[in-house]
Length: 342
Ligand SMILES: [Zn+2]
Ligand SMILES: [Zn+2]
Image (cartoon, protein in one colour):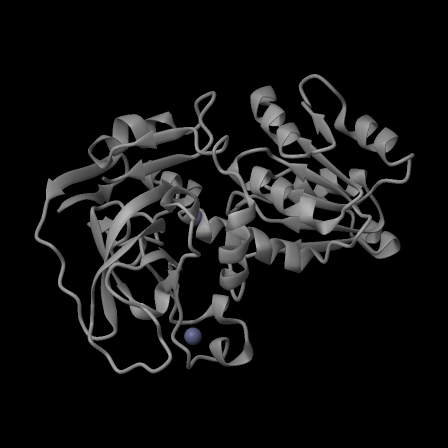
């Protein structure tokens, strides 16, 4: 099989390899669609070092077909050769403190497909059976490869406790921001306001139903939000860009009791100035959202409702993962890059 192995920053080796063997409770997946995530891009650039073992095949957002499955005796599991499936990359131990207290995303023995073991930037991938979710009938592989980011977005929505009638401001109209817009349409929020410096992305957001789009290079976001909320401020601010400015900006855009959701991954070691008195006096909530515990099945169902076509801007071949993939991320017009294997 063809596989793209991460060696070191800016170095990925693409070679023909032997098909990997499956062990007990594992299956071999023929990878059909495999998305490049911001995390993969950060690893490629060397921004994130500890998370990944050298010589690992990256790729944790993928869908495909079960090619081989260990003949096991797990009861009540309906998975068979030929099934179309999506993969949940996070693997949990089940016996640490966090796993035992419904907080498995903080598992002390956490590992992940595409980070600590080989992932989906290959033609085939071995995964534990517990990571496999059968995809609904009629759902294509390209949409199914949005399974993990969609589940993360649904966790963010759970965390932010958005109410009917809320006005929500989203910072960033990349693939995550655009998934948020589509999900929020189903929540009967009063208004979705989204900001991005790329006007083309804002056009897509509008098509998905964002009520107000703001390009902060052209308009003052604080003024626009003030006008759109009759001077009161919004109820929820979602950072989908990993911007350092999210907390200070959110404080300016929200009404008292408003919530700031830190969803995008901010720089690891940078701080911002806030006035704790303001958080106290205005009952502002600052909320984190990390990965996708317990939202996978909901995400699978919800994927049928979303449109990924305008988000999936670049469909590439595995052998061109560097030139057509990593080297394109961040360029104008590029939102989501996905590898397609025939
Ligand atoms: Zn990811
Ligand atoms: Zn655990």
